[in-house]
Amino acid sequence: MLLCVTCCGNAHASAADDAFELLGQKYLDDLTHFSPVNATLIGDHRADDRLDDVNAAARDRALKAYKAYLGDLSAIDRDQLSRANQVDLEVLRNEIESSLWSLDTLQEWAWNPLVYVDLSGSAIYGLVARDFAPLNTRLRSAAARLEQLPRFFAQARESIQPARVPKIHAETAVQQNPGLVSIIETMIVPEMTAIDPAIQERLNAAIETAKDAIAEQQTWLEEELLPRAAGDFRVGAELFDAKLAFVLDSPLGRREIKARAESVTNTLATSESAAETNPFAVLIPASTRLLSLMISPIMYGIPFDPSSSSVFCFRSTTT
Image (cartoon, rainbow, N blue to C red; front, side, top):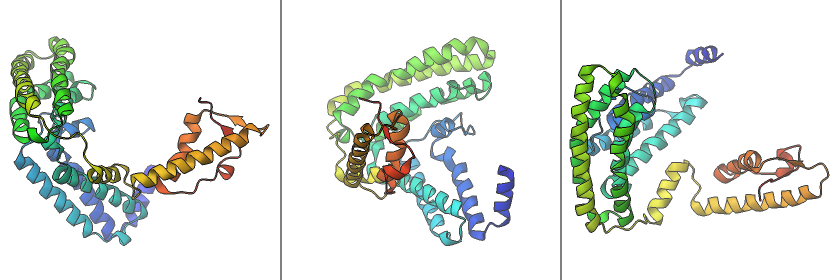
């Protein structure tokens, strides 16, 4: 059925559809350039042996690429796309605009050391947590990434601006940075006897290199960053509202979302009260009914009418 639909869809695809699908595939192919670590996490294993570049040059390349993608998207006539591709275009546009905004405006790379703690841990965890390839292959990639940790942490230290770092972020990074050693000791070392001797030799050396780099980073976090961290952990209303819009991919602001949520809550409370007096009321878990009933009105403004949403009256089982 899926093949039939796909073939039929391609038979009637417009030039705009073809252009969009090519652009979408190009963007997916580029994910390993934006972040090899994140590519691994979503199942793209073409760059499993690479660790992200996090210096200014890499950020400049990403900014130029995102802007180029937005230009290419704007050149596609949305009205000539299939309905499915119109939706996908808006999803892709939001994703790229969000990435561009995060890099250029939010700039967590400059004030949040946890970005680098997370990337370094995910770089190794993503290779060993799932059996997506033979152990030799995955641990060879792990060795390659461990070898790149000195460069990665050096770039992180160059990028972080202590005066912008909130104290709580620095304190949390101090606590979490050693976790990478734990990942190595508990998820890599126990597997080393099962791999080829040549890979084992390389991995042993890579682990020592990595531990030295982690220790150096820990010293910097404790002695350089933490004492100088002076940023405000609050991002402010403007940045918060912008990030909320990207995360939810919705034009609704926080005040509108709150108002809609309160309205739906009041409506549900009224419905629940009515159900108490109805001898045919059906008792069902709130987790399975309330969530589905609330999401559409809150996020997309779809009218919610409990009297027509189900043939049953209902009330929550939660207290």
